[in-house]
Image (cartoon, rainbow, N blue to C red):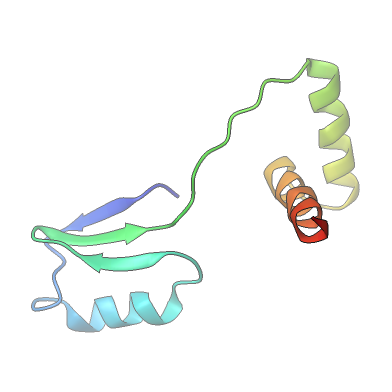
Length: 84
């Protein structure tokens, strides 16, 4: 999910909704703004270009673990980052 502003949703007008968002958010931040509430996911895209056969192989590896390709790549990156 990209950063999103909920226009018109302010702490003064919708305190219960903002409290629930803060309670249930897993990653990111809920930030009050002058015109609404910003949901900042903390996510940043990474684009990589691969040959089609390599992408197909990675997709097969992901499917073998019942994961989507982005989930599988994130898992692999987490393992690399944890071991460094």
